Length: 82
Image 1 (tube, helix red, strand yellow):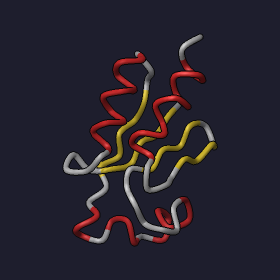
Image 2 (cartoon, rainbow, N blue to C red):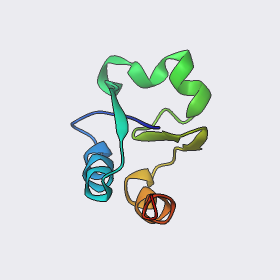
Image 3 (cartoon, rainbow, N blue to C red):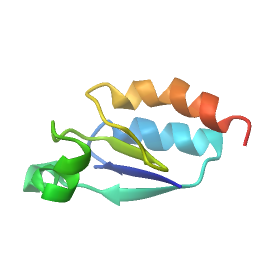
């Protein structure tokens, strides 16, 4: 199962859009970066740069500044056959 951490006011919306477009089941975890949600120890363990969005695809963590666009080809390739 994919877990997507982000905020509705962030580029996580691009990820939500793409995952829905692919028909992939995912869990959306709201992360309020303005209130310090990205500075929580559990979040920093996955993403030391404390950026959103952050995607966990069954243990494969994709967390970088360009995640909102880089997840498209990754998830398309991984989930198009499902």
